[in-house]
Image 1 (tube, rainbow, N blue to C red):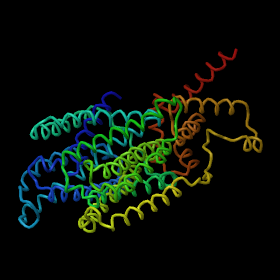
Image 2 (spheres, one colour):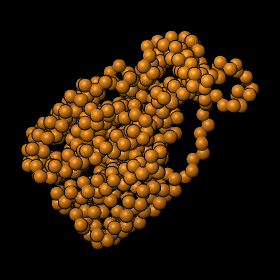
Image 3 (cartoon, rainbow, N blue to C red):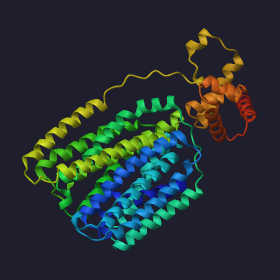
Image 4 (cartoon, rainbow, N blue to C red):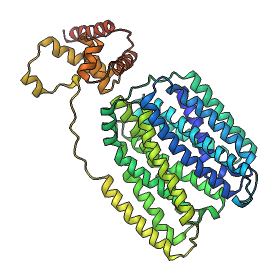
Length: 481
């Protein structure tokens, strides 16, 4: 856990320097603002398609998933090393064909590398219970922001060196950290996960799109990069504090998705202020919208990790789908702002119109996101037989004791619903073929679930499972006596 905390914090620090300031990192390498924005836009598009590529990869391959993080580190470092070769020309007019190819290559390597590393850490978070995963993410983001704050006083070359050193540290951690057991693709589980996540994915995508558009509409790219960087840091730190307060105050599990009720008014405040102050106060308007998108991304990350863990689906499948859609929305927002928002100036009546339309859309999104959903009926797992079924089909006393034992073991070892089903069937001595038939999955998928169940229980065979259940039942009997 401690090693994962260090590795994820170092990665987030490198990501903040490369992407959080939008055009900060290319500027450190002597690249002009226009080309810096172009690199970041290419990287966002590449990042989105990198996620979608991981999604299809997760449907076809299991054994190679552990290589994604290591490849991601290599690609990020390559992207950083290519950028200085682009040159210091002010715009596209003086850019040679070779430099254009290098620009596209740098953006592509940065984007795809970042996607692969996000997926890798998503797999790690999906192994943790919801509350622990939430605290882990907030803690890593806080540590990364503290490291990011140190770059304010470092010279340019030291910042670049710090990023490369951080990525080297990430690579070392990934080598030493055990890879989570790959989960097989389960169409039924994917359908259930999508039904849970499509609303937060949609809401986060809207925030991401607005974050891409806002700097162009507010004239933020005409302001000071240092001011934008400092305000972005301050707003992100404030959002982390607001997200951490509920989970610190309330010791029981909280509904993470309720954070959207906090995020929406923050984004709306940005659009309310847009016609009044435009890019004044260092670009505070853009900071409101950016902070909302930042927080929404953290909430979606936690929800994706919980869904993958709860339904026994590959975290790569879940994260690549959720993050791919939101990243594509952000890239489209930047493209839309570049072609449609650069002509706006302070006092332009069109800015007021955009603000009103955006506020109306946000209010509609609020009604849509917070609409009470009807509970989706789904078959009960084998370890949660309801009383009606028991009344219709009586079971003997031993079977009831075994079911209670399996429920207790599933809770103690944090098994997913599917793994709890596997535990119940293994405790009955079922074969792989019989288990696969009853759960309506392939034998290969059944074997993968069995291996994950063994690992969590700390056993190595079906007989070990049976013995473990008997020991549990014996200890319960002694306690009762």
